[in-house]
Length: 124
Image (cartoon, rainbow, N blue to C red; front, side, top):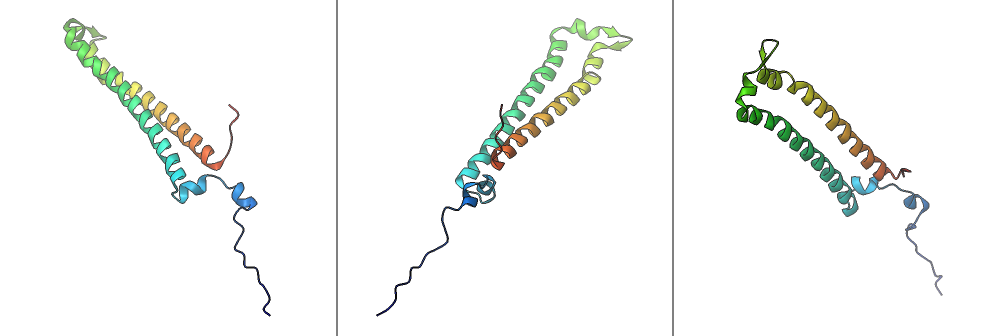
């Protein structure tokens, strides 16, 4: 008579797997990880489109304003044409502000994503 031997595999549901973060889904490229990455990319794309839209509306309307109101383009401030001041000087602080704001928002999106995949819950 032969003795019965029970053959088992590794445990399927360990305590470590229950506490594992969602980062494994991202690094292993599972469907859930793909969903997380697509949501991050979609949010970053929406942010970029909002910034580009704001840029086009604000800076795109300035030349149109000078075209529609030629008398405004002929005015001078401190001996410098207003059109030159608006398009050659005032644009750059606006661009710097827009870039700074974009970077802050993009980093915030990445922090939220990192918190999501690492399993940290935020109270707000």
